[in-house]
Length: 172
Image (cartoon, rainbow, N blue to C red; front, side):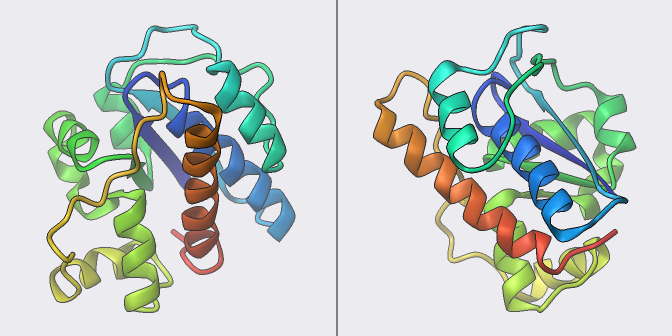
């Protein structure tokens, strides 16, 4: 399964999710999982934000040799699962790749659906979407850029927890 994570600048949230997904896959012995990330407003080649990189290392991920890149329709179309940090990012992915609706979720939405429907596949997540609607509040992970270290830690921990829910059960 190939997963694409999307945020705004591709220097905090999505690279944290990408690198943690790789670490979890290795931990769980999942040799068929690949992950990458992109940003809706990324500057190509930027490194991870330093505090985000520190938090990622503390959570067991590796920030080395990361380079940001902008979201493209090709990246979205090639993914088996697209997980975004916010509903706005999800909308931007779908504007570029409308046929990916059944494969594109916010990270919070995917974790919620995985738990509520005991989803085992991306198709299960898509099938559960109409049945298990959100409470109405946005299923967004806040962007920590410009915030204090505690905010970065909270965001990183939230991403790790949500990925854990998805990694334990959902496959291609």
